[in-house]
Image (cartoon, rainbow, N blue to C red; front, side):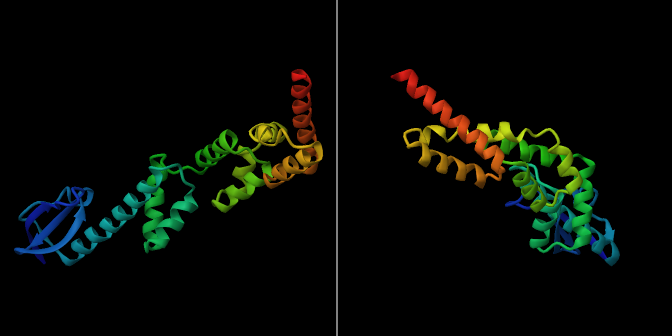
Length: 212
């Protein structure tokens, strides 16, 4: 048993509270866990253990929230990161459930975000996107759903247009080799690569003719 004789906010971390029992420092807790404690309250060993277990969950939740500040994450990304930080599966499951309940963790929203970012900044093929999302732990069923409307030829065109000026002064054979290899690295199949590379060369040819 221990009687709470002091509750003080840490100077270096305003989100944590130092708990003093019987006049001596005992442990610290997240503000969310310590909020209902009062000076004079008596804690049993089981209650102390429960508080510290809750605190571990809060530590894991805050770690997950810090990750989510930068970009949306998949469930597996969060689980793997927390596991690397030393949290056990029970704590991780509790955090994942809480984040899902408040819509901060949603694999479909994450997958759509990922595809949108790729489409905007680095267009690539369906199979390349599938592989990336599978590596992030998104289910194949969900991947198929979010990629259902992907126009691969359009994606290849946009990827090619971002590079066409870089190789515009090359001879046709060298241009086709450069552009073809580039599009293949983005995962596009032979037919799309051939079609889009020819389109890009035609654009260069038309521009050259117009300036003559």
